[in-house]
Length: 491
Ligand SMILES: Cc1cc2nc3c(=O)[nH]c(=O)nc-3n(C[C@H](O)[C@H](O)[C@H](O)COP(=O)(O)OP(=O)(O)OC[C@H]3O[C@@H](n4cnc5c(N)ncnc54)[C@H](O)[C@@H]3O)c2cc1C
Image 1 (cartoon, rainbow, N blue to C red):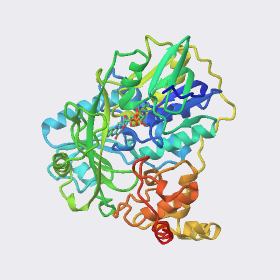
Image 2: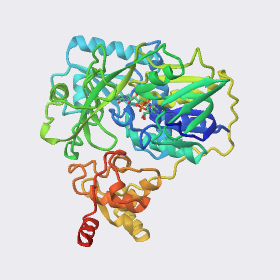
Image 3: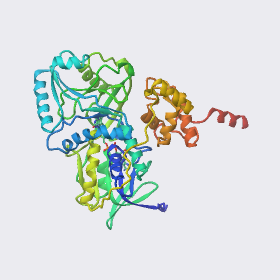
Image 4: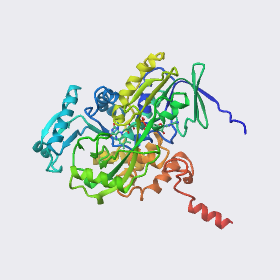
């Protein structure tokens, strides 16, 4: 069989990977007069490590001095309040407590305090009594803690979707369901091939997360490798929401920050993650062993946690590089190829700062950068019905009755919000869930999923049998009973 003809799409800058790094980069570059294209393998952006993490905007005191993680984490943290305001993304600056359980651990906490304050992080050392006054549900046996008031919590998927939406408002384009299968460099141009397209780019940014080493190798760069490290997380229902106010960290171990108790920006409490080196990059299974370690770690910090209140669990995979640090550099072999690889934790926090450095790096590679006068940093605000006052809800329903129809009862999400999410780019049930939280409550979509399926079908004008949970192969409806009945009656 001959090769299928693919029309070539010429662009100035192609970004491979629509995780938090790729979307932050494309939005940053959309400040400039550039022709930009982001290419994402999944049906929506933000579905890699970005959708399955702890959602913490780290304080900037954990990272080893001299690392790129340290270089980008604190500035990233400092960019979050304005970024989330501009993009209307849920962000809670609820602070981080690193809790010491013994006098020896308190010595380690003091080391983090010195390291952080030298770097300019706003930190306070708290005695046992001060910690318990702030967080009365912590284990009374603790020795003291480090408090970072500027640490926070964000909804990572929502942020990635918002960054992409704002970049598109500012002229960028993106492809989904477009896995780069082939890439090469020829006569100063770089080529990327997906099932459907051939893209010819002057500059390529490798933000392919776990698969960044595979993409680099396609261009002949084999000087770094990515090693998957899994983290399991467990989510409680909203009844345990107020057990702690800040994110609670233990004193870290040698390869991870330990098991945390996390009040998420969505309002649920979460505990995790584990930190297990694994063989398969796509291994997202949770396990009894993972649960036992997470629960034991979380319970040692907050003894009242009750496993019967857990409503969901997931695993995410960190993209650890063989350097043990982020890789943010131009390829030494392929002019115009920029690697943003090995962006494991605190990559969510660091992403806006990494993105802000990309114009400098592309400038070094010869790209001319000319700022647009009309860049708009703000995204159209999102209506969150359950956060409105009664009066605001009444006025909204009068104006648009679709906001008066509750689709997700657990989280009080309306039809209007689901329609809006589709209009902003959601294409799947998971896309709706991550954007609006419809289906993320106690019943986990048992009640609302059929209704959401119908809304997506109606809004996109596709049959319900084509609506998927997370892309092809995850269709939820095999046939419509009415159609089946009619076909049988006719037969
Ligand atoms: C359990 C866990 C907890 C974490 N907690 C935190 C935290 O609390 N705070 C924090 O700051 N960080 C945290 N992190 C780290 C954070 O999640 C990552 O640093 C961040 O999500 C990395 O983003 P990314 O864009 O590099 O990768 P991804 O989000 O993985 O994005 C890469 C994208 O590239 C796409 N892609 C790959 N190959 C191709 C291809 N060939 N063609 C087209 N597209 C392709 C993928 O589909 C994917 O969407 C955590 C990570 C894990 C796993």
